[in-house]
Amino acid sequence: MANRSKYVALPKGVSEQTFGAAVKEFRRVLGEPNVLTDADHLAPYTKVMMPVSEANHTPSAAIMATTVEQIQKIVGICNKYRVPIWTISTGKNLGYGSAAPAERGQVVLDLHRMNRILEVDGDLCYALVEPGVTYRQLYDYFQEHQLPLWLSVPAPSAIAGPTGNALDRGVGYTPYGEHFLNACGMEVVLANGEILRTAMGGLSKSNTWQIFKWGYGPYLDGIFTQSNYGIVTKFGFWLQPAPPVYKPFMIQYQNEEDVVEIVEIMRPMRLNGVIPNSGVIAHALYEAGLKAKRSDYFSDEAVRKLAADHNMGIWNVTAALYGTQEQVDVNWKIVTEAFGKSGKAKFITEREAGDDIQFGYRAVLMRGGMDMREFNLYNWRGGGGSLWFAPVSQARGSETLKQMKLAKQILGRHGLDYTGEFIVGMRDMHHILDMLYDRTDPAMTKAAYQCFDELITEFSALGYGSYRTNTAFMDKVADTFGPVQRSVNRKLKKALDPNGILAPGKSGIRIGKPKSVFQLNKHFKNQH
Image 1: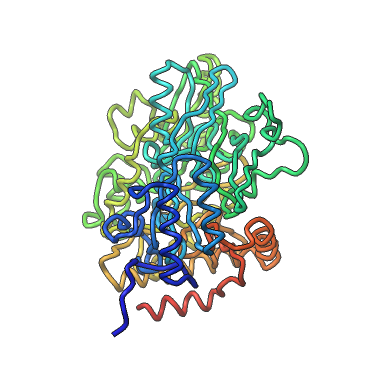
Image 2: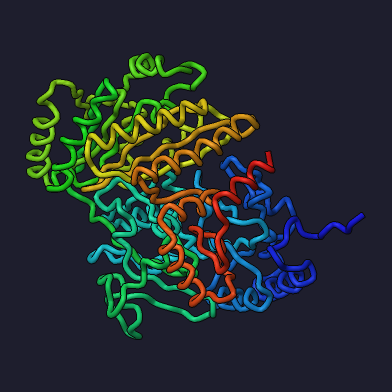
């Protein structure tokens, strides 16, 4: 009988003896309590919502650093022993992989204790933070210091943080909702332990690090998003000054085909700034978890009854106006006239909404407040399974209808619901679908995997690329963007991280040749 390892998992290609030597050095740098290797302590870093075995994403250890100097020493140890690390900030990447590493045996480098707010400038409206700082922490800081500043937050709001969200190119719901667009200056620990300060941060006495994005020479910040080329230890970003007047509103439509009209009306108002924030067009089933469960409305035919029973639209458009009272009044007139022409729209403002939960949580998010009620959508089916599918489309009504029809066909073939919304940029739309399934049901779990695989294949074949994906499908999505991009990413990886110690597999980037989609699918089928 073979001897069992003392570790729950081992890094690929690393012996137990070698890994033990690395763990010993981690403990020397970080202290015994900050290096976790037993199964109980690793459980929070193993849990996933994806339709794959947790064994695929089980870490070998979790280590917690609190200083840049510690991180420099950690990458030195990792280079010495060829131990890969998977870095997280708050670890709340729900539906995209959570805190678990992309590949079994990677060490999770947890930076949630690096949580200092380093600087907030109320005049120039920017912040500089460490990666563990949460949106709630910043929100409370603004309240405590009476700073008239607003955040832009994603749906997890309070428990997530600006560093991790922006580096994965997440979005929010205020006029500053394109989060990486509003990033400005970062500090990065490279794989060789060197510290890079991007843009104006390269100057020793720079006072414009969080003011001017570009610096001199090639713009480097972008290569540290959705990548594994370095560890971001300081992150700067711009903040919205609190407007004198804020007017959230909702517009409800009662037919799925009305989404064409909605987008065609909204696009010019986004382009010319009448509606300054990323408006959301949410399907009734996306909002349903706030007010009902699937057991009450279990068929497509029941969706109209669901909307009627709970005062919802089949499509629920939420956006907001910001500025002086005069600006808001003028723009509200433009909005109501444009959407009111067809007679299909039902307008709801704070006065009409009262304490309606659907309106309430959207109104909070559009002003950068803390509200996690969007995740009530996990109540729709139950069972803990969630996969976010995020294709991008042109901001055209016809494209919206095509994407929704295709998604419903694919989901329907696998017995899953269309739970989607469109987030309207100026020229693009993020089509966000949360594939909800029951992870305790093996047949449904297998169907969810096959369905997600099919969504990527069919959407990308029509030119609809995913802007973000979960750790189980990173290679497949990377393949859809072509071999040249994968080759360039690999060359950058070899140059910046020759031993491949930083998050191998992130966005499909690793030193060696990537796994083919065939190999990944074969691996999954063998598991089931």
